Length: 248
Image 1 (cartoon, helix red, strand yellow):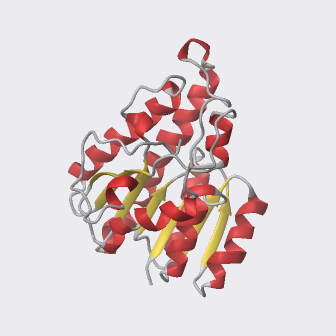
Image 2 (cartoon, rainbow, N blue to C red):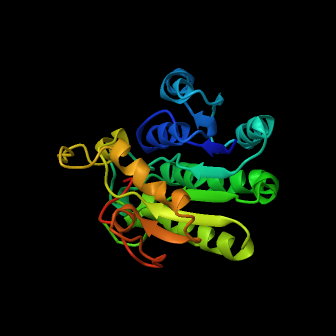
């Protein structure tokens, strides 16, 4: 049985990815800050599929929490997929760089960059032993497009993109994907830009199965967009393509 760690799994894209993986028979280790919301996900769609689910509440910026996640995966038999989805904006609502609180920027780098890197470091022995180990880092087109007010969040995602590319070079036996899901109807997007009409945006449940085509097709390491993956044929990894949105 394959095992995945999914961070930020209590809502939005993380919750949708957890549900899709459970439906495909994956055992799961789920992480989020809110224990009650996380347990609701674990007890609902995930365990309803008959797979094993371990919910570990905590913050990915905490080394102890990251160690607990990997220990839980080890208890399920190993680690085949690490989904680094948890993230924070750095300010809610978003503000221009001239007004960006340094404390918020610091938190964004700790959660969005150091958290994923720490989980990769903690989980590498299990990922290497998997034989089909993969890392999916959730990116954003704010990593490559200079949107006003998205500077702090975009800087963290640009860092994750480069870190992912380097990891793919250093760990050629792993598949490392950094994927832009596009703009979605999420609480995070609503918090980022409260005045925006999100009605026309896709729900995370529509985007999650598209991103999992990376797994289904065994695509090589690289940067992908949900827009590209949704096409008739998946595009080759695009080093600078943008997907028309953000998890933003």
